[in-house]
Image 1 (cartoon, rainbow over the protein chains, first blue to last red):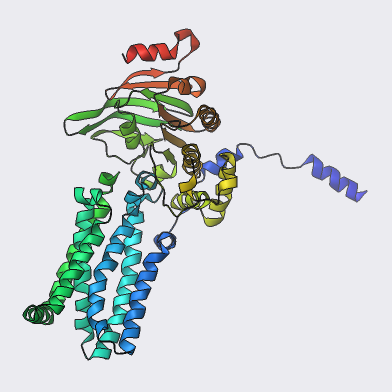
Image 2: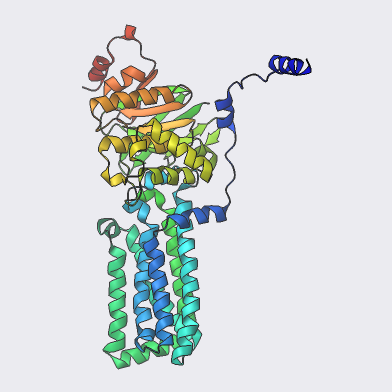
Length: 237
Length: 229
C-alpha cells in the first residue's frame, strides 16, 4: 500500500520538463579561462618538430660537451638563428595557413594566440640556453655568461629581423623569409669564425666588453618587434 | 538579442568601402545581397571585430564588438578560410572549440555532434586537405556554430557548392536561424528567397534596401537585377 502511495505521489508531483532549457544554457556566461590554461592549450598545438629541434640542439650541446667535441662551441651559435626562424614561423602559422580570420573571432582572439605561442617558445628556448651555456662553458674552459651571450646574440638578431620582415611586403611574398635570414646570419657567423681571424678577435673582444649591453639592447628590440607583431594582427587579415 | 550597427563606415585610403550603414538585427535569417565589391565582406569583418571601423558602432545588446564577451556570442564563417595542414576534421573543430573557451569534455561532445549534423562524421579522422570544397564548407559551418553562437555571420557560405549541397546548406542555416541572429551574404538571389525572413541589399558601400520581402512585392531577383544594372 505504502509503495503504491509513493508511486502515486511521485507521479503526481513529478518535476515538469524544463522549459527553455536550451535558451537557459546559452545564456549562461561562458566560464572563465585562466591565462596559464590558455597558454597550455596553445602549447599543445605547437608542432612537435619545433620542440624536437630545440631538444636536438640541447642533446647535441650536452653530448658534444661531454665528448669534448671542439665543434660544439662554434656550431651552437651558428644553429641558433634557425631556432629563432622556426620560432617566428610558428607564431606566424595563422597567417600562412589562412586561419587568421577564424582565430581572430574566437573568444581568446588571435592576439592572445600569438602571444601565448611566443611566450611558450620563448620560455622553452630560454631554458635551453640556461642549460647548455654553463655546460659548454665548463667543458671548454670558458665563462657561462660569455657562452650564453655568444649563443643569444645571433638568436636575437635573427628574431628581431625576422619579425620585422614577416610583417613586411617581402614577408607576405616569401613564405620562408625567416629561414633565409637565419641562413644569412649563420653564414656570417661561420665566416667570422673561419675566414678572418682579425674579425673574430674583434667580435670576441666586443662580446667580452659589451656583451651584456648588446644582449639587453637586442632583447629590447626583439620585445618591441614582438609587441608590434601582436598589435598589427588586423593587417594580417 | 539585438545586434545594432550604427552609422558604420570604413575607408581605405581613397575608397569608402562601407558608407554610414545603420541597421538592427534580431533572431532570424537576414540575407545580404550585393555584387562583388559592394562592401559585404568589409561590413561583415567589422561586425566580427576583424576590421576596425573608421567610424560608427556595433553592439550586441549593448556589448561592444571589441570585447571578449561579444566574441563569445559570435560564430563566423569567412569567405575563404584555411586550416593547419596536419589537422583532421575532428582536430580542427576541437581546436576552434578550445579557442572559444569550451572545456575538453564539452568540446569533444560538441565536435562529434556537429560533425554528425554536417554529415562529416564518417570522415572525421581524415585530414582536411583530402576534403572537397563542399566538405570544407560544411566543416566551416561546424566550427562556426561549435559555441552555440547567438550571432552567426556567414560570408558567401554557398559559393562553390553544387546545387544539392547548396540546398542542404540553406536548410541548415534556416534551422539555425530559428533562435540565432544569422547574417549571410551572397550574390545568388535564390539563396535568400528560400530562407531569409529579412533582406538587405548593398551597393557601393551603402544599404539600398532593408526589410522583409514578400511575394506581393514581386520577384526579388527582378528587383535585384533592376537595382544593380
